[in-house]
Image 1 (tube, helix red, strand yellow):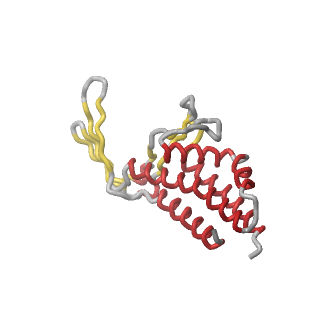
Image 2 (tube, rainbow, N blue to C red):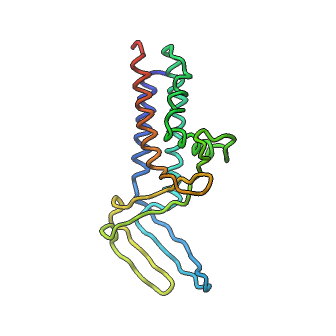
Image 3 (spheres, rainbow, N blue to C red):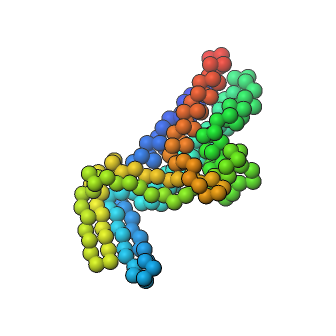
Length: 194
């Protein structure tokens, strides 16, 4: 693994972060049945779907965790003990959460939780301030919302611990995980002879 390869990898992470923040899309719709049996339809236009937002978050978290393996390869190339990368990861709570989430996503479950939290993803949601909404149309048993400025919308994907308690948001864990990986990368590259 070359220094350029690592630079390219961090550029990919940057693109994945940017993609996770791009909120415009075709929208989505769903039905909700109330306890009295009445079903209402909800339609959101101009915003990416919940599934697309979740896919983006999952891709990001997997690549955050994959970066650790690339840094280990880079360490080996420059004559550094790759176990030092694992040690740096093991003392960073955010990276351990990213590890558990990524491994759960990649393998369908966890054999062992590195963080001890056994985290999993909750249900994705979004907040749209009134200034982001272009129109709201109310029909009998249907609400349609047009998002005029998707850049104002914030998606949230909670991370839950093994008890089901919210311990954070996947986008925040990814951001802090990337910052931690950048520090590890800087430490590796300082030891590089070129």
